Length: 433
Image (spheres, one colour):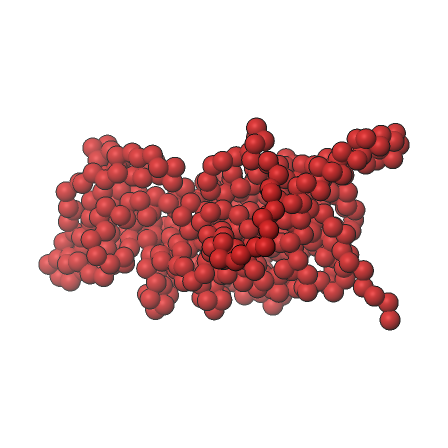
């Protein structure tokens, strides 16, 4: 019986992360293609099409396409491992859950579930594909959890059943709770806030929430009861970078106060600009007049951040038409997203504490990577991505230059690239054990 060969090494932090997923792939070449995709998605390339990714990591674009479209591996198993890594990094800590729908324009109708519908990226009706996604937020770090295809009525396939976006969001919450995640609060926009099925499902599960509602939101009251407004109160809107801005909040009381309460937030109580005035509904307990604005304000920050993340990692750059292949692409993108999130101080704390508790026999001196002029010392997700990209540069440059070095031998250049790549492999990454 022949022995299964080892996967070709790339960069240590990529290999260490992808090793968690090794058993999902029956063939070593499929594992290598998964590793190449993760590395290519993290790498600094403007477009993440398969031909460009293959060129970046010295892969075969046809093999990468086969990996997504036909290779034997389970998306569900990959997701289970990824969620397990996030759960280990959280170490039991609750986090904010954000429900967000993502829409991307797509031409024609050959791609599964593409239809003329509301596309969030362009804030209007357009031809495109939509998914409902769940993300976690801990401190200033976002991390991906799960997604569902939204299947419009007119594009259902045999065996499909129509599910609204709020129904898909409920499914995501049920799946995540089954994996053992704990939510401090659920955030969502008015599409979900105006869905009684969605809010009732949150109540049944004992979950706190802050959701947007429409200005004309109605509430049943007893005869003789009326809607009234409290006085405007200023509060400090504290942003994730520590800066502040003055905002105003007032409560809208329908009849007598109940478990669910309603608030209006604005930047100017006199003019109430449409673009910066929001109506929210929440079941958070206690006196939350000053905290509800900052809690809901995170949703806007998260929405902007997620768009940036998806643009950086190529969420919409696939050239695939069937839903199964697209779902595989999105799951691999979420795997790359998770790798970056795990490096942030918010999620890395338990792993760093565990490492500090050990007593290494001899400390290994670290290379002076943080002295690089482009090393990002900031906090949050994007600085971690910038630094991982710096660590990938020597290996990726070697991949790009090797064809030239085969044509024009330059031993000193080749040896220098190999030495620099080896040096990057001594930089430790932060991953759950």
